[in-house]
Structure formats: structure tokens, C-alpha cells
Image (tube, rainbow, N blue to C red; front, top):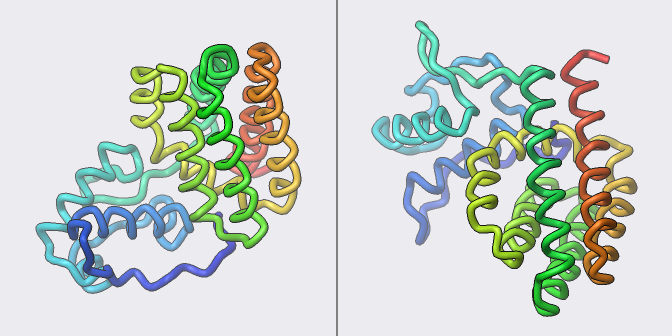
Length: 225
């Protein structure tokens, strides 16, 4: 799980809706392990922690359930448990979708898109160096969004978005591990290099290799190895 300290869960009321802000805070709390897998999510306690109404909490819990991060049992909502088998399926889907997107991007995306991806990867690595793992996840999502949309793969990106919460939960488990910082920098550098050279086969291979390495770490942890 994330090594960086968990910030206050109090919602900062700003231009975003309370529902959006509360959802962001709940994502952070689940990804960081503040709320552990299998832990019950009691509405009254959440209201106190987040400083929002019960109606907002209920809306957010429904959204988290639709994302696969929360499940409802007889005793009420709880943080969904992750098992190695389901994680493996998610990584397999990522390898298929992201590998194809990398190939198409290398072959068809504009020079502007490729330059943006190179810059986005630099921003990811800068956040990594500062151990700002929440920012790493946000910038990584932005990288893949640009790769898919810049390749014209809108429908494929919609499919990835439907898995994004679960992807980020697994990503939170792997990016804070000691070996991932250097490995990720090398793997992403290989992907960006292939994109800039417009080598579709190499880009697909680099993307799949990056995902497979992350999958090995996540599945090993989930299996208790």
C-alpha cells in the first residue's frame, strides 16, 4: 500500500461538488489502506470523518460499489477484498488494451501527441522521485488517457475507465514497493522511446512488459508470497 502519510479526510469545500470531493477522499483512503479490505464502512463514522451529510455518503458508497471498491453484505457496505485471481484478470485486460493502444499510438498518433506523452512521463517520474504516490497515479492515468484518445481509441478508453478504480487500487499496491521506482522508470522510458520512434511492435512489447512486471508484484503480494 502507499507509504506516504494519509492526509486528513476532512473535505475541502471548493468549486468541485461535495460528492466529487468526498469520492476523491474515499479513493485515497481505500488506495492507501486507511480503510482495509473487508473493513465495514459505517455511514455515521464516515459522516464524522469526512464532514459531509449522510446523503452524500450514500451516493459515494453507491459509486464505489459500481467501481468494485465496495461491496454490500448483510451487515452493510465494506471495502471489497482483492484476490489474486481477479487481479490477474484485470492485468490481462490491461495488457490487451494498453498493448494495442501503444501499437496504434506509435503508428498513427500525431507528433504533438507523442511529445505530450513524453512530457507526461517526465511528470510521472518526478512525482515518483518525491514519493508522491497519489500524484503518480493521477499522472499515470493522464498518460494513458492521452495515449488512448490520441490514437482515436475512444471506446477502448471507456473500457479502461470502467476498470480504473480497480487498476489504481492495484497500482497503489505496487508503485510504493522498493523495486518499482527504478523498474518503472526504465519500463516507461522504453515505452516512450518506442512511441517516439514510431515502432508499433516495440511499443506494444514495452507496454505489455511493464504490465506483466506490475502483475507479478501484485499477484505475489495477494497470494501471500
